[in-house]
Structure formats: C-alpha cells, structure tokens
Image (cartoon, rainbow, N blue to C red; front, side, top):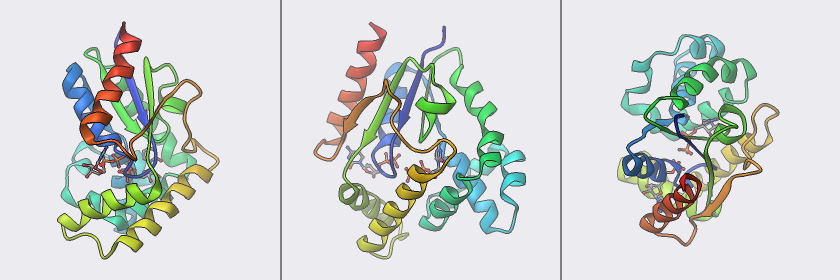
Length: 202
Ligand code: CDP
Ligand code: CDP
C-alpha cells in the first residue's frame, strides 16, 4: 500500500519546509497543493473565470515564478472558497496521494477532505505574529513585501477566510498530530514531524 502523509495548517506555519524535508527523508513525492489555488488565483487576476481556470489547469501553470506574491495569495484564498473550484482539483490531488512510492501533500484540507485515510496527518501551526514575521522575512528577501504590519493583516485575513468557508474549511483532522512551531527551529520542527511519522510507520 502507498504511504500518504497529510500536512495542513495556516499560512506560513512551516508546512512547505517540513513537507519538503519529510519527502526527502522518506524518499516520497511532495505536492504543495497551495500552488494549485495560487495558479487559479493568478489566472483570475489576469481576467479568467475561476471555475474555468481550475478545470483547465495545466502542469506548466504551476511552474512560473510569480505565484508567491501576496496578491496571488489573497486571490488564491478567494477562489478556494468556491466549491466548484475545489471540486475541479480533487482528482489530481487524490491521484498524487496514491503514488506507489509514497507521497506528502500539504495544504488546508488534505487530512480532512482530500485524504481522510492518510497514514499520518500533521497539523502545523504557530502564532499569527511568528508566521507573519517569517513570511515577511521571506517576501522581503525577494522584494515582495511592503512592511510587517501589512503581511500580518494579510495572513490574518487569509486565515479567517480559510477557516470560515463552508466547503473544506481549514481545521485539524480529529486524528491529526499538532505541531506548534512558534518556538521551534526549522530543524526541531522537521524532527518532530519525522518522529510523528515514524511512530505511525512502526
Ligand atoms: O508552507 P507554509 O506557508 O506553511 O510555510 P513555509 O513556506 O514552509 O515557511 C515560511 C517561512 O518560515 C520560511 O521562510 C521558513 O524558512 C520559515 N520557517 C521558520 O523560520 N521556522 C520554522 N520552524 C518553519 C519555517
Ligand atoms: O504558503 P501559504 O500557507 O501562505 O499558502 P498556500 O498553502 O500556498 O495556500 C494559498 C491559499 O490557497 C490558502 O490561503 C487557501 O485559501 C488555499 N488553499 C486551500 O484552500 N486548500 C489547500 N489544500 C491549499 C491551499
């Protein structure tokens, strides 16, 4: 049976960093599902209709560099509240999760909706202030952020929209292992994730 790891959590909690390290550690494939919503969000900013953009999404749409901007993140969280957008992206994610070599998927609804049967579910969090500081540093390094306060407001707005939507809201699965990275180094957060996964594989 393929082994599937679901990693969910709010914006800039460290999901991607942990997912990449976990995938490398176990030799699994990794899918950042946020990129799917970001790619749809970017197409909407360019004038496309959200549902059409989701239904016609192609691999190359996930490749270009400008998916990490705050504008695209906000557009992503708006299109992510549309049920037909989410529905159009389900099959691709579930097929990825069942890859024979094992898979790590990170997002908001992986453990609750996309892969409720995942072998290990992690819910990665940190305080909004810590997350905004990390995201600010990351964006500033790429000349993409104005100031910390704007990034904090952006993160809080996105979290509220993601937690408040009716379809696949952001929340921990009942059987998820919680990892609060507020006071953890990247190395410690990765070690905590690997320990939780090892416990399930044993
Ligand atoms: O994928 P997600 O938006 O949840 O977060 P990320 O992109 O993995 O992490 C956001 C930023 O926080 C990155 O620049 C990481 O290097 C940093 N980070 C950190 O400083 N400490 C951690 N324990 C985890 C991530
Ligand atoms: O990296 P960060 O956590 O800031 O964002 P992301 O994971 O790239 O996700 C961008 C947006 O896509 C989120 O704010 C959610 O609205 C949406 N999303 C979702 O609804 N479901 C997922 N599985 C992944 C992302």
